[in-house]
Length: 126
Image 1 (cartoon, rainbow, N blue to C red):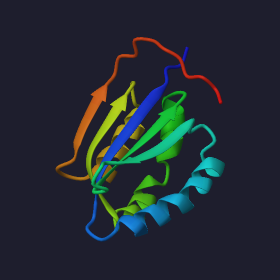
Image 2 (tube, rainbow, N blue to C red):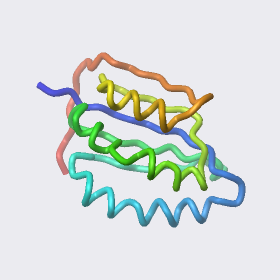
Image 3 (spheres, one colour):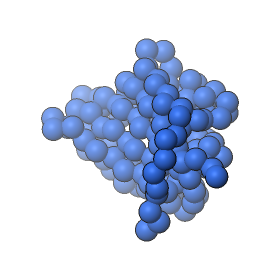
Image 4 (cartoon, one colour):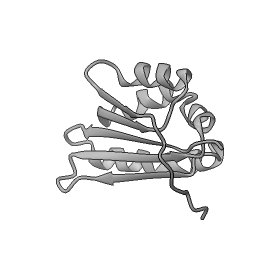
């Protein structure tokens, strides 16, 4: 059985960039839906002050997460005009490719936490 992976990125929204971020994020969703079919879930949540955004992604396995991250170094440069990463969490066992990309995209000072051991559960298809 392949194990699902959950990836949560936590980001600070740059001052005055909330509306620009939201516009850009909304236009990126259809692209991700079409080009990354194994990304099962992608949801963004703002904190109560609209100063931080957390993005949750769920993948059926490590290969699907690898596919999501292909090209993320280029996409992140665009997004980082609006947001600054503060922390990343991975639930599941990521591949070495994923870890290389995460470290490249995250940069210095970004907390990366991995919870590698899958204990069970389910992902319900839509």
